[in-house]
Length: 139
Image (cartoon, rainbow, N blue to C red):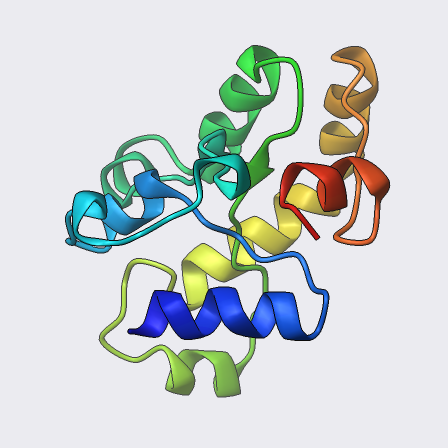
């Protein structure tokens, strides 16, 4: 029901929505249980795992990802936030996407090293209003 409402709201308000069988699987559901328009799915989605966060740190994960990102539209899901007591409290007992994770995301994606990596790999950043995104997501 939630996916149906999500799709209808995207259509009603002419907004791009992110549909992905990959993300549905990550959430612990079977994507075959949902009616999802294939033309609106984006499967080139990347997100660090808790294992990668613990073993290598997010900087290494993102460096490797940006060096191997496939051609075309991709989404890297991040959860950036500045380190603070408030963020520590908000994410208590939440190690994945917790305060330390979010701080590492913010630090990496605002760094000169990231900027240089994007330039070196000719990666162009786009936003949800960019025509390539709107076309891909059917908005």
